[in-house]
Image (cartoon, rainbow, N blue to C red; front, side, top):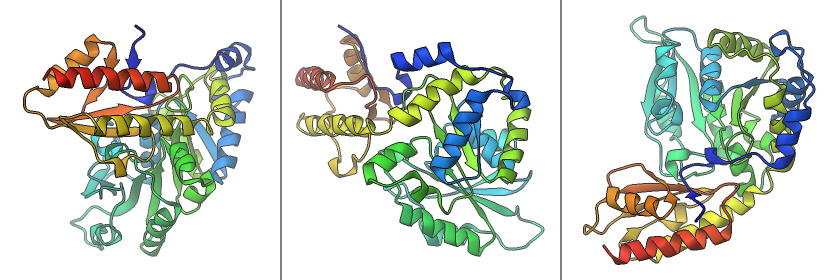
Length: 346
């Protein structure tokens, strides 16, 4: 049986069209700004997000780090949710590399940060304190069930930031999932943020790469930060070419991933010994809990892997599954059938 990999949408494989585009890409030296295919995707990304310029980078982690380094001086402070990917899953890079201080406030269940919590986290002028410089948001929010933050909410955070002289970075690794889920345009999410990063290599199915967008002045700083991190690439058009196809062809099909996630969540809700909050399944990410003490979580995961079904354990009794390009309705049916059978033997 072919393996069904629900660990992440990062396991997507490029389409045949993407592979052909890599082969035929017109190339140049991107460090000298001479790769026409890279320039094309950067301009396309800037146009989509309503920003002045874009910058291709190697990964989502690099994208976020480049942005924070461009916004913040050493010793300055970034306000982050306590479930933010930048805080939890990026190796502490903003502190290790940038000497930027993370100021954590609670993420709500829907991925938002309370406006009052943001306001209360902003430091006054005092030589003893780091200077608050940046607010970071995440959309969709990975650890909060893939929740999509609304443009109106992002606008409200932007207003608070502007009032206090701060800037806002949007970790939009899966921003196109939010676009599809809420039926909005990308520009509606980005109109009041100072920078955005998004991944090409998750649900959009390109093999590698992320893009950062902002003002030309900001991108000039980000370009320098990318260089410091060793991210200057030469004939990077082989990365950009499938990314262009991802942006032009793969956004609307994200609806299929969301539908598959709904089908998967509904099925899990009907399996005794498992618990899931259906109201929180909005995009392509779902979390569920093992509530049957007769089986250890590690045992369930081991059994399912033995049957060719892979997913992640994210807590003592919690698991994550992510639908993506390459997962079809029949894979969901198979997963539910095997999961139900394993729970019956607990």
